[in-house]
Image (cartoon, rainbow, N blue to C red; front, side, top):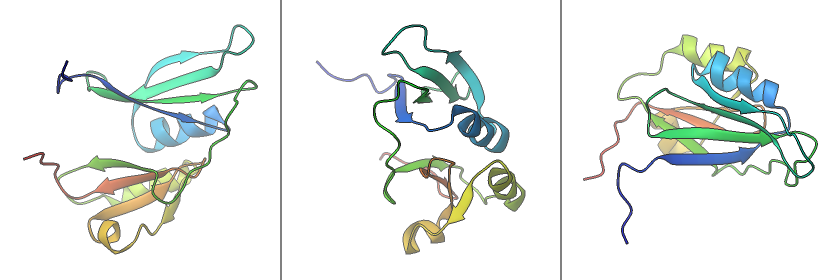
Length: 134
């Protein structure tokens, strides 16, 4: 069996506050809410899925009273978006106003983009580079 390179990708993370995460990723970054659910039974989580309509990826954030594993981000937990151009400072300002915190990610990423920690401390890198897999 092989993995189809067009397969959809979901990145899942816990969140202490889904409202704050939504403000950051939707209001600040500009993603759309693709799905939302409230826990209906014991052991279920509140759920927020954000992304770009039609994209082959999305970010799933789980939270609520039944959250078993609180967020424990490290400096290396990166969500990198390759923009293929300069990062608009107004966009960074909007992310900060939406609960983010601009941080240094070291010489490589500081040279090739801007890093903003989300309200849970996970790091979003807006990279000026393009992605090439070949």
